[in-house]
Length: 150
Image (tube, rainbow, N blue to C red; front, side):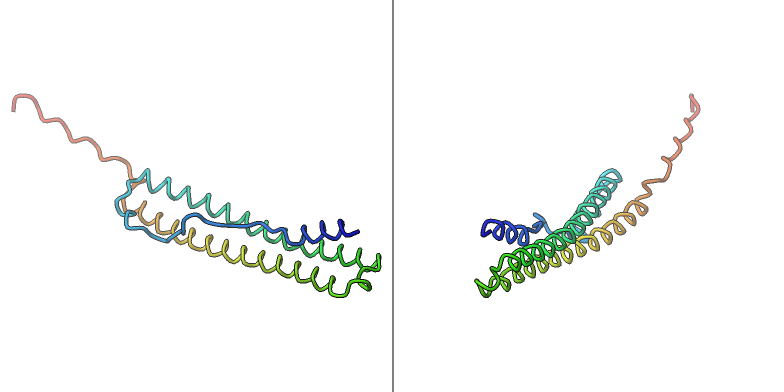
């Protein structure tokens, strides 16, 4: 029974961890020096960052729900086995573990939401740079050749 309880608590405390190696900024000093290809590549990178952050938010929701379920299962098992009566405070520990997992999930969601907002703002800035550099404009027509002999 103790093993099942330990497994339930481990499941309750397991949440996805997130760390962004580099802090995303809206603009960088080198942005103005990028050519059209670099702007397009950076815009695609923002799309990837947004997709990853959205996945992290969904994973954090799933982890919080899993922790809540694991806590409920652990409490039910403890109640049915009589362990709650034999070991006062064990239920409080299980509830605290689930609460910590929920808080961690909320923290991950908040960080990911901030990342999405920053990436969307950066993408808007990159769109402005792309348009400002006339990246979609057709290349200029070649100048007519001068007549020979003049």
